[in-house]
Amino acid sequence: MFPYKTSFQIDRKTNQALYLQLSNQFIQLIKERKLVPETKLPGSRVLSELLGVHRKTIVACYEELLLQGWVESVPKKGTFVNSKLPKLNQQSFNADKEILLKESVGFQFYKNNDLERKYFKHQDGFMYLNDGVSDARLTPTEDLARTYRRICSRKNIYEEMSYGSLFGNEKLRNTLANYLNKTRGLNINKDNILITRGSQMGIFLSAKLLLQKEDTIIVGKTNYTSADATFLQTKANLLRVTVDENGLVSDEIEQICQQQSIKGVYVTSHHHHPTTVTLSAERRIHLLNLSKKYNFAIIEDDYDYDFNYNHSPILPLASHDTNGNVIYIGSVCKTVAPVYRIGYLIAAKEFVNEAANHRRFIDRQGDALLELAFEDFIKSGDLDRHINKVMKVYKARRDLFCQLLKEKFSDVFSFEIPKGGMAVWVKLNDTYSWGNISEIARKNKLEIGEWQRYDSYGLGHNSIRIGFATYNEEEIYELIGRLSKTMDEIKS
Image 1 (cartoon, rainbow, N blue to C red):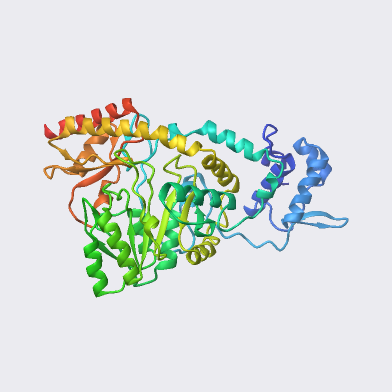
Image 2 (image 1 turned 180 degrees about the vertical axis):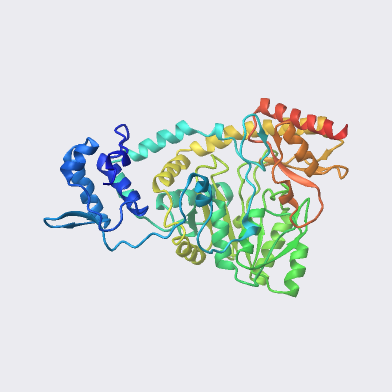
């Protein structure tokens, strides 16, 4: 006799129905061949008495097993484990193999080591450098919550709950078009906008449409590493041009165009990633003229347009584009908080239509309620008020951070105070190495992070990008203190 009474565990405190608890345990016993095919199961009355549950619970359990095909019912004879079940050929399970089973696969798949990134497990008491991230504590959660509640309380809100446009919510696209036309000098309508899940999706879709194997795209010698990785996935060739204090050197781009065909140029024109420099007006015009003459696309990633501290933001390349050569990419993730995955890809209607066709196979549509909330957030002026508020905060943090860097590390670091953005491009004296600093810093509970990725091209600039926006005044002093202690140990 099978020990049914001791083989089943019933938890009356959980929300899962008792019959499902029993069904799942029966299935496990059958898979482990503890109950083999053709085994006759006890009658419902007998099993209910053995397990101390109502007979209807057992009946429901058997019905569930029957529906799933684990058992079969033979009239006037009873319920039996399905005689046609094949043996499940798996490794024997034990506690020691639990981690192995969860981490390993039993099949082959394509793996790309170029995509691997080192993620640091956060430890209590540690401080972590980043490359320029907004402070989530400044997120206008109450304003957004009120907007969300207002949106969700509309009588016809159910109309937004089904499948919608591949391009994103139409109201948001209309409002965003008007907003960008006024604030960034664009000349677009909703048909030029595809709502994305942030800038990275826009970069991915642009690469998907523009590049195939052996095509060529131009990027900076220092460049946004995630963009590099995205372009490389298409098997395209990356040609790198110099980045100086005025941004991408457009004369080098022209020389390349005179020698070969290119498909595109990727540029972070407002605050170059990672160096934070701004593309000069002369080079902007030159690049636009080159794109028209040689028929290539400009992927303009304007990831932090709103954050400029010394003067008004410089209008993007897209505002001067009359030939349909610029693909303009941005998001509200940096402006409000990374968790709000709303971005946009702006281009000629023909390109946007094709991008939407491709987007549907990785993300059928966005979050309609979130998009409606941000439509209201923009239209009501709440977004501009938030930007004005955090601009003052981030400017004060930039000034303090740069002041302390200069006071404490003038013999170690050199840098230019960034005109905008959320990070500083810091060059280390060649006497020292970031690898050594990173190792010693951990002893002082400071994690430098992936400093190697800033020089994947082997330029030897010995620089990294350090964000300041995430830290309040007290935290900036603490971070500088730990870094100072680290450098003192290295110098001694």
